Amino acid sequence: MTHVQNVDGQGQVLIGELLSPITYHVAVERLGSHYRATVEMQAPRDWLIRQGFKSRATLVLLSGDRIELEHDGPVDVSDSLRVVLQGKAVDYGDREALVAAFPEADESLS
Image (cartoon, rainbow, N blue to C red; front, side, top):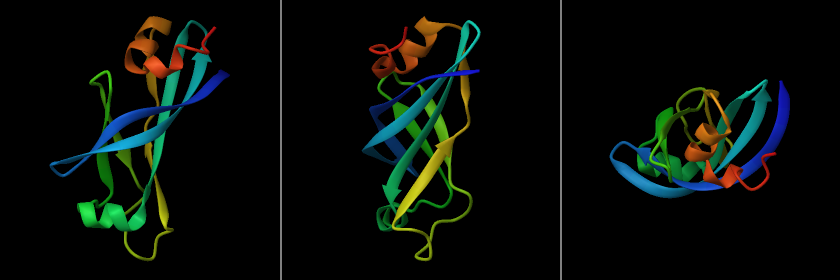
C-alpha cells in the first residue's frame, strides 16, 4: 500500500433531513492498480448538536456519491469543540473511478 495524496473537497453533509455545505478531507492510497480513499471531516460540536446529529451522517460528494460518516458515539457537550467524523475506506478499481468520485484528486495523481 502506497500513500498517494491528501486533498480537500467540498460537498454536503446530510444529518437527518438537513443538507449543509461542508469541507472534507480525503486520503488516497494506491494498492497495486487499485486505489483506496478514506474520508473524514471536522465539524463544530455545538453545530452538530443543533442539527440533531447523534453518531452518523451522510457525506454527499459533488459527484453525487454518498459516504456514511461516523463518530464513536453520541456527540454531547463533553466532546471536543471540533468533532471528527470518519468514513470507512472505499476501494476504486482504477484511477478513473477514483477521480469520478473525487475530482479534486485528479490534479496530483500520477
